[in-house]
Image 1 (tube, one colour):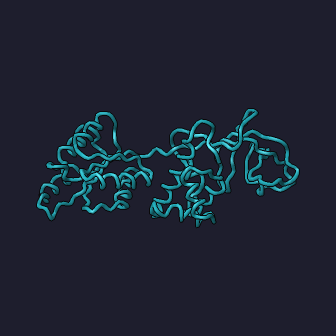
Image 2 (spheres, one colour):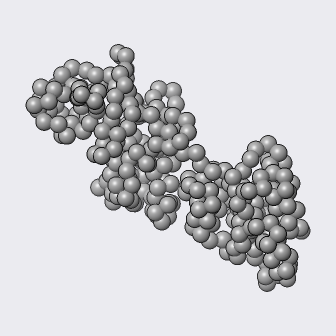
Image 3 (cartoon, helix red, strand yellow):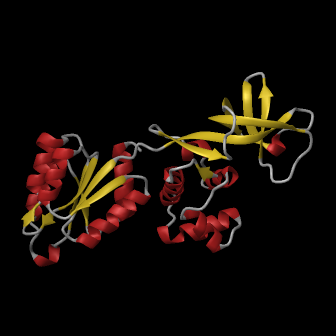
Length: 287
């Protein structure tokens, strides 16, 4: 499976979707290549190459989805902008068709070639005229009694997920960046910030769907930032408040309790438990 000429975004979309699927099912990022190798019966180097920009086949993607109890359509099709994946180079006008994958159907466009009178080598998919229109399916799904045609070019519309945007605010840069990376692997669009001023400025330029905020930011608490979010920026946004600093005496438990009650925030103690935070955000962001 190759991206259409001039863009690498389709493969990026696919690799992100596969990594997000693995992360949702508890596979640590460092185990993604090993897991893919196990699913597809590949060597570690082959799997690592695929996950880092190599070509996928649709059968491989389907196998990954089924391994985790999902289907190819749910892995690739989301609610936003279409991205084109193509097989082969078009030299004739493409026709609207349906790509049949087991019990699931995905809209596609296909350039039909010559009729196939036997099973050629290295042919995975064929086009078949049916009463319901042109269909593309695995070559083995239809017998020789049905006219089959070579697929010269295939385009599948893949829709990128409408990932919730999350602001991670922590003055400890490694902590903020690690949580940001984990959330991105889980399918969010997370951005890390290291002080209140920077995220307050960002709030003027964009709308975040949720926030993960450390209670202590530099020499101040994050109460004013939380107040700003609740009163003017995005009053309904989920906010997860992280606290530590018990051993330093910088945490006033009464202040934390008051902010939790007054501003309806979710409270979690450090050290950060990234899977719990991701699960909480998934629940409140409905994703």
